[in-house]
Figure 1 (spheres, rainbow, N blue to C red):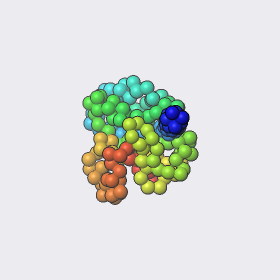
Figure 2 (cartoon, helix red, strand yellow):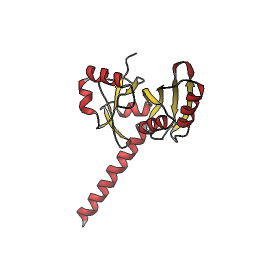
Figure 3 (cartoon, rainbow, N blue to C red):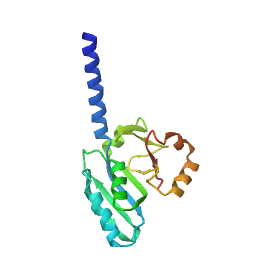
Figure 4 (spheres, rainbow, N blue to C red):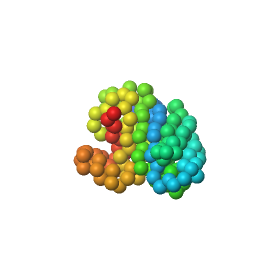
Length: 172
Protein backbone atom coordinates (compact mmCIF):
# COMPACT_ATOMS: atom_id res chain seq x y z
CA UNK A 1 0.00 0.00 0.00
CA UNK A 2 2.80 2.45 0.89
CA UNK A 3 4.71 1.52 -2.29
CA UNK A 4 1.55 2.06 -4.36
CA UNK A 5 0.98 5.46 -2.76
CA UNK A 6 4.64 6.43 -3.34
CA UNK A 7 4.42 5.46 -7.01
CA UNK A 8 1.32 7.68 -7.40
CA UNK A 9 3.12 10.58 -5.71
CA UNK A 10 6.19 10.00 -7.91
CA UNK A 11 4.03 9.89 -11.05
CA UNK A 12 2.27 13.10 -10.02
CA UNK A 13 5.59 14.82 -9.33
CA UNK A 14 6.96 13.79 -12.74
CA UNK A 15 3.77 14.96 -14.48
CA UNK A 16 3.93 18.33 -12.73
CA UNK A 17 7.60 18.69 -13.63
CA UNK A 18 6.91 17.95 -17.30
CA UNK A 19 3.92 20.30 -17.30
CA UNK A 20 5.92 23.17 -15.81
CA UNK A 21 8.81 22.44 -18.19
CA UNK A 22 6.53 22.54 -21.23
CA UNK A 23 5.15 25.87 -20.06
CA UNK A 24 8.68 27.22 -19.90
CA UNK A 25 9.54 25.92 -23.39
CA UNK A 26 7.99 28.88 -25.14
CA UNK A 27 8.50 30.73 -28.37
CA UNK A 28 8.43 34.49 -28.16
CA UNK A 29 7.80 35.27 -31.82
CA UNK A 30 7.73 33.83 -35.30
CA UNK A 31 7.59 34.62 -38.98
CA UNK A 32 5.24 32.83 -41.34
CA UNK A 33 5.69 32.90 -45.10
CA UNK A 34 2.41 32.01 -46.81
CA UNK A 35 1.95 30.65 -50.32
CA UNK A 36 -0.94 31.08 -52.71
CA UNK A 37 -1.72 34.70 -51.82
CA UNK A 38 -2.83 36.87 -54.75
CA UNK A 39 -4.27 39.99 -53.12
CA UNK A 40 -4.73 41.95 -49.91
CA UNK A 41 -7.96 40.05 -49.13
CA UNK A 42 -5.97 36.78 -49.08
CA UNK A 43 -3.59 38.31 -46.56
CA UNK A 44 -6.52 39.56 -44.51
CA UNK A 45 -8.09 36.10 -44.28
CA UNK A 46 -4.83 34.57 -42.98
CA UNK A 47 -4.40 37.49 -40.56
CA UNK A 48 -7.89 36.94 -39.18
CA UNK A 49 -7.40 33.16 -38.90
CA UNK A 50 -4.12 33.57 -36.99
CA UNK A 51 -5.61 36.27 -34.78
CA UNK A 52 -8.21 33.76 -33.54
CA UNK A 53 -5.57 31.46 -32.00
CA UNK A 54 -5.50 31.88 -28.21
CA UNK A 55 -1.69 31.87 -27.89
CA UNK A 56 -1.10 34.63 -30.45
CA UNK A 57 -0.70 38.13 -29.08
CA UNK A 58 -0.37 39.98 -32.39
CA UNK A 59 -0.01 39.43 -36.13
CA UNK A 60 1.63 41.95 -38.45
CA UNK A 61 1.20 41.22 -42.17
CA UNK A 62 3.77 42.25 -44.78
CA UNK A 63 1.94 42.33 -48.11
CA UNK A 64 5.01 42.60 -50.36
CA UNK A 65 6.58 39.41 -49.05
CA UNK A 66 3.34 37.51 -48.25
CA UNK A 67 4.63 37.04 -44.71
CA UNK A 68 3.35 37.60 -41.20
CA UNK A 69 5.32 38.54 -38.11
CA UNK A 70 3.71 36.80 -35.15
CA UNK A 71 4.18 37.63 -31.48
CA UNK A 72 3.16 34.94 -28.99
CA UNK A 73 1.60 35.43 -25.56
CA UNK A 74 3.81 34.75 -22.58
CA UNK A 75 3.14 31.67 -20.47
CA UNK A 76 1.02 30.02 -23.16
CA UNK A 77 2.06 26.97 -25.13
CA UNK A 78 2.44 27.61 -28.84
CA UNK A 79 0.91 25.01 -31.15
CA UNK A 80 2.56 25.00 -34.56
CA UNK A 81 -0.05 22.46 -35.70
CA UNK A 82 -2.79 25.00 -34.87
CA UNK A 83 -0.94 27.65 -36.87
CA UNK A 84 -0.80 25.31 -39.86
CA UNK A 85 -4.48 24.40 -39.50
CA UNK A 86 -5.50 28.07 -39.30
CA UNK A 87 -3.59 28.95 -42.49
CA UNK A 88 -4.93 25.91 -44.35
CA UNK A 89 -8.50 26.56 -43.14
CA UNK A 90 -8.15 30.06 -44.61
CA UNK A 91 -7.37 28.37 -47.96
CA UNK A 92 -3.59 28.80 -48.11
CA UNK A 93 -0.35 27.01 -47.27
CA UNK A 94 2.77 27.67 -45.25
CA UNK A 95 5.91 28.16 -47.33
CA UNK A 96 8.10 28.65 -44.28
CA UNK A 97 7.64 29.03 -40.53
CA UNK A 98 10.46 30.26 -38.32
CA UNK A 99 10.24 30.56 -34.55
CA UNK A 100 12.37 32.25 -31.92
CA UNK A 101 12.77 30.76 -28.46
CA UNK A 102 12.07 32.93 -25.45
CA UNK A 103 14.97 33.52 -23.06
CA UNK A 104 13.48 31.14 -20.48
CA UNK A 105 13.15 28.36 -23.06
CA UNK A 106 16.68 28.95 -24.34
CA UNK A 107 18.02 28.68 -20.77
CA UNK A 108 16.14 25.43 -20.17
CA UNK A 109 17.49 23.91 -23.39
CA UNK A 110 21.18 24.58 -22.88
CA UNK A 111 21.77 20.96 -21.87
CA UNK A 112 19.73 19.30 -24.62
CA UNK A 113 17.98 19.65 -27.95
CA UNK A 114 14.63 18.04 -27.13
CA UNK A 115 11.79 19.26 -24.94
CA UNK A 116 8.10 18.46 -24.47
CA UNK A 117 5.43 20.40 -26.28
CA UNK A 118 2.24 19.90 -28.25
CA UNK A 119 1.30 16.23 -28.61
CA UNK A 120 4.94 15.18 -28.85
CA UNK A 121 8.33 16.84 -28.50
CA UNK A 122 10.23 19.60 -30.22
CA UNK A 123 13.64 18.58 -31.52
CA UNK A 124 16.39 20.99 -32.59
CA UNK A 125 18.63 19.51 -35.27
CA UNK A 126 22.21 20.64 -35.03
CA UNK A 127 23.86 23.32 -32.95
CA UNK A 128 21.96 26.48 -32.06
CA UNK A 129 22.56 29.67 -30.13
CA UNK A 130 20.30 31.79 -27.98
CA UNK A 131 18.40 34.34 -30.06
CA UNK A 132 18.80 32.26 -33.20
CA UNK A 133 15.67 31.60 -35.23
CA UNK A 134 14.57 28.01 -35.76
CA UNK A 135 12.80 26.81 -38.91
CA UNK A 136 10.07 24.18 -38.68
CA UNK A 137 11.05 21.45 -41.16
CA UNK A 138 8.04 19.15 -41.02
CA UNK A 139 5.86 18.46 -44.05
CA UNK A 140 3.22 21.14 -44.42
CA UNK A 141 5.47 23.85 -42.97
CA UNK A 142 7.55 24.48 -46.10
CA UNK A 143 7.35 23.74 -49.79
CA UNK A 144 7.90 20.16 -50.98
CA UNK A 145 11.00 21.29 -52.90
CA UNK A 146 12.50 22.98 -49.82
CA UNK A 147 11.60 19.99 -47.66
CA UNK A 148 13.52 17.63 -49.98
CA UNK A 149 16.47 20.03 -50.14
CA UNK A 150 16.75 20.18 -46.34
CA UNK A 151 16.45 16.40 -46.03
CA UNK A 152 19.31 15.98 -48.49
CA UNK A 153 21.51 18.40 -46.50
CA UNK A 154 20.53 17.03 -43.09
CA UNK A 155 19.92 13.29 -43.51
CA UNK A 156 19.69 12.83 -39.72
CA UNK A 157 16.49 14.90 -39.76
CA UNK A 158 14.67 12.18 -41.70
CA UNK A 159 15.07 9.82 -38.75
CA UNK A 160 13.49 12.40 -36.44
CA UNK A 161 10.41 13.08 -38.58
CA UNK A 162 7.26 11.85 -36.91
CA UNK A 163 8.91 11.86 -33.47
CA UNK A 164 7.99 15.46 -32.86
CA UNK A 165 8.35 18.85 -34.44
CA UNK A 166 11.81 19.19 -35.99
CA UNK A 167 13.43 22.61 -35.85
CA UNK A 168 16.53 23.64 -37.76
CA UNK A 169 18.65 26.62 -36.63
CA UNK A 170 18.86 29.33 -39.29
CA UNK A 171 22.32 30.72 -39.88
CA UNK A 172 22.40 34.49 -40.14
